Image 1 (cartoon, rainbow, N blue to C red):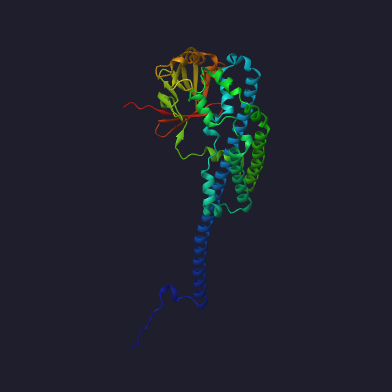
Image 2 (cartoon, one colour):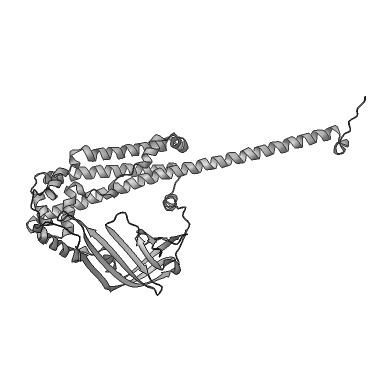
Length: 406
């Protein structure tokens, strides 16, 4: 049986060269499609790798910058504490006439009570850097990696020095502090009495004489680390503007607040329960602010609360909340209803209340407003309208949460 196959119509008029041309065109089109598909995919993968590399590099560079700020704060505290201590020593015959702030600066300088949380290093990024092979593969720059490792070694070395070396040791142990303040070894009636007890120690002079060694440790760390981080930015082609955008970047949907967004009661989000700040912004553009500060000392076993209030007018100019304070409305009261103390410390408590009522115990906001009763703060408010960020001219940022009426 003979079977005949017919050529499709589109191919009946093609010559041999026509068939070859068709085949080449088909092959070329397929090749271009494959190249474009895989080439685009490779381009996107390379771009994502570079973005991840820069993000990781900026995370580490920012960690180094934050460590630099911690050491700068330690150095500044060292300078101010040493200056206050020298002043107290020179005027130890009239301690009662020296301001409490200066006396407390001296006490904090020579005891372990002065180390605040903002002077501690955050080690989370160091742990990630040292434990993750992905971090090393992503960064893929030997010089940068060596610089980062050297920085972490410097930071560990500084922490070890502060714990082990004699010139970092405070002149009074933690056990002696406990006995002095809480154990009743001394009948301490006021801050001046505490200072007088501390000044009797022969170890105090040695601690003061070693201040240059402590300063040298701080300055060496700052010099070496600053140079390393500047080289890191150069190696990764990261500018100061890049770092500023990295630090300020947020995924929150925010926008400048309008007047209708700001009306209501706002509570400051603070790190501890010793302070409270509340703003109440009324629709008629008047406002009141109330702040509470809880004071605790070794003289009594509970808290003394200082409360102050101010009022004024408010409005929105551009993207900023502008407040005009009426300084005549300033009120301050001291609540000692929760304070408990031994009878022989009654005079000390009274004197402390008087100190709170003096000029030096004015809250920082009131001190600023004594010079200028107008305050402008740039606003950012979130999508829900319940979280507010305010930043003043000095780049101080505070966050507030709105009270919701139930």
